[in-house]
Amino acid sequence: MNKLTRTIVSVGAYIAFIILVNELFVPEHLIEGITQWITNSWMGTLYLANIIVGFVFVLRDYAQREIGHKVLLATALAGIPVWYFAGPELAAASLIAFMLSEMTDWAVYTFTKRPLQSRILLSALFAVPVDTLAFQHLAGYLTPAAFVTEVLSKAVGVAAVWYLLKLRVGNAELAQAA
Image 1: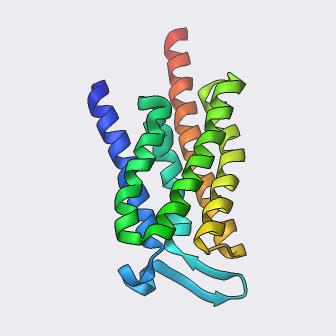
Image 2 (image 1 turned 180 degrees about the vertical axis):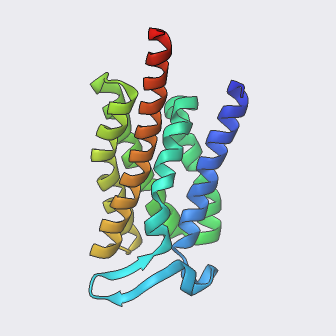
């Protein structure tokens, strides 16, 4: 796959998933039983979006590898349909949270100078809670269930990318040794 195709696929998937995840936070837009799993439990409401949002961070890492910190423009571009479909409050909360976590990522990627796998883990350690807390607070979805589930979802996504990169780097090292 050439560079242009990788860029289009990575950035396009990132934008599409931002729109999808934000849409899943609006129960009346989809079947309520699908978007809202636990209602008024002792830990609060839990949405399907809290569980699958981790993929956004995985897709952002790939988009960022292709276009660098211009990924902020892709985030802003995704905010336009989110604003229209999910509403201005949710769009603002989402964009602010993504921007805060992207700045956290930038700091980790810029100042640590560590291998990509290490930067992904360090970035997740700081950016995921920042993003989750900011979004859920601003959108009015902050509950213990939602916060813990969303952080864990993002951690699973990040761990998957870290493992795939580790396999790729390990295979490259084996090929060079042969």
